Length: 150
Ligand SMILES: [Zn+2]
Image (cartoon, rainbow, N blue to C red):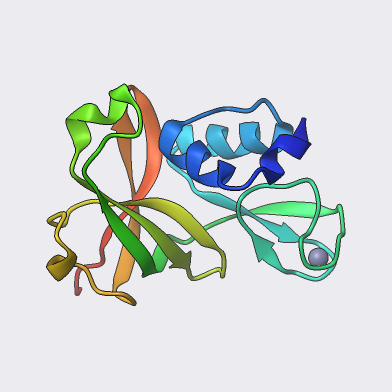
């Protein structure tokens, strides 16, 4: 079952299309999301962090993996403006900003940027972001918005 998690791009599908693939790791992840928390894995052996959830550490191969809660700070690593909805349930949302963000704990995760115009001029690589949550088709999704100066 966990083998399916290794499929290329499936983390994007997990994040964007909300597929629950039935693995224990994915279930734990989505349960936390429903509670308004973003959790990532940390290896108990080498302390490496990783996303998306897997049954082993991608750095040392260890299988003793803990969950830690992300603090919610990230920077924009890459983005794209989506004009064509990937599935009908996203049709109301276009255009939107899909992105890879690097969270302060280390991993890069696929997500969306909200609270900003879906315009390349409004987005800067390296810009500070804050975790928030949105709902698509009745499901909560972790997304990021520009961090505002305090
Ligand atoms: Zn490890």
